[in-house]
Amino acid sequence: MAEIKTLAVVGSGQMGSGIAQLGAMYGLDVWLVDTDSDALLRATNSISSSIQRFVSKSHLSQAAGSDALRRLKCTSNLEDLHSADVIIEAIVESENVKKKLFSELDKIAKASAILASNTSSISITRLASATSRPRQVILGIDILAPFLFLAVFAREDSENQKLVAVLKKDSLQIDHQKLIAVLGFDVGCVIGMHFMNPPPIMKLVEIVRGADTSDETFSVTKALAERFGKIVICSQDYSGFIVNRILMPMINEAFFTLYTGVATKEDIDTGMKLGTNHPMGPLELADFIGLDVCLSIMGVLHVGLGDNKYAPCPLLVQYVDAGRLGRKRGIGVYDYRKVSELVKP
Ligand code: NAI
View (cartoon, rainbow, N blue to C red):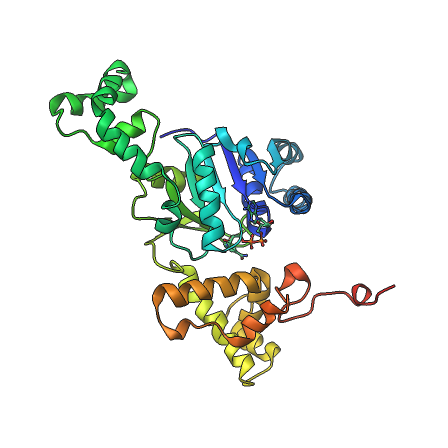
């Protein structure tokens, strides 16, 4: 299994900054990328204060905290990612925008790199289709097979002994995936690596295998999540995967409960906190996640699972149209702005 030394995270919002922080805290060199330089500035400030909180709670030594910050580099230039071992995408929840990024990463990333998406709901198989790697490499392998076969023999070191033995025994049955892995390439290198919010705190990572994701890619990704101290669950590649397939319809229903005047927002949240032991009410949680993210996920569920029960609540749509995106904008279902911010000088 290839050793992971350099992690790149594209998108420095609430998720990307948290994932980059984890990478740096667990000893990786990290590139954090965003098209918006203000977002990068906000991300470095929030990473630095979050690391300081880990230090003040004695979860990290001061020296380890300073080392983590030193390992973190920011850029707006994707070309800087050419040597990254793993690239995790954490940009807006839009299939078209993500596909465009994956096709750019495909041209820049090294052949053995893993391209992961932190998407909450979008098909990994479709994101992978924006890269040319799987098909081109397989096609290339078919044509180049005899040369690659010779190359494996030329590299007959201890690491490859087992594979070479297999190849010698029956040269007609070349395992293309193993062959590519030995030579440093990987077919199905695209995978879903879905962290929970906030990534440095939440224990879970949901791993999603697309139709072509290789076993090698899966093992390396799982090992990386475990290195970050996370518990891994695995999902098939269907809209919303496990967590958001269940969570988002509940949040949407909370919006319908508010929209149809059944109860106040406070009573809806208190009902779910005290009645079902949830640490946050569904409307508070929606504000924390971002109402734009919730709406995008509902859209993916609605189209992907083809059932009207996933239609987004009109009130959720209206809040997003009004720019009430939740905590990150100071207002969502609740208003988080201080009175002083509302009074114009
Ligand atoms: P966010 O809105 O906080 O941050 C997105 C960042 O991506 C912004 O800083 C934006 O400037 C940047 N960006 C957009 N297009 C870009 C591009 N082409 N290249 C580089 N940077 C670009 O979003 P958030 O909440 O961090 O979500 C990111 C992803 O993580 C989404 O796919 C979302 O579904 C997923 N996610 C979100 C969770 C949440 O609770 N908010 C939880 C788990 C996953």
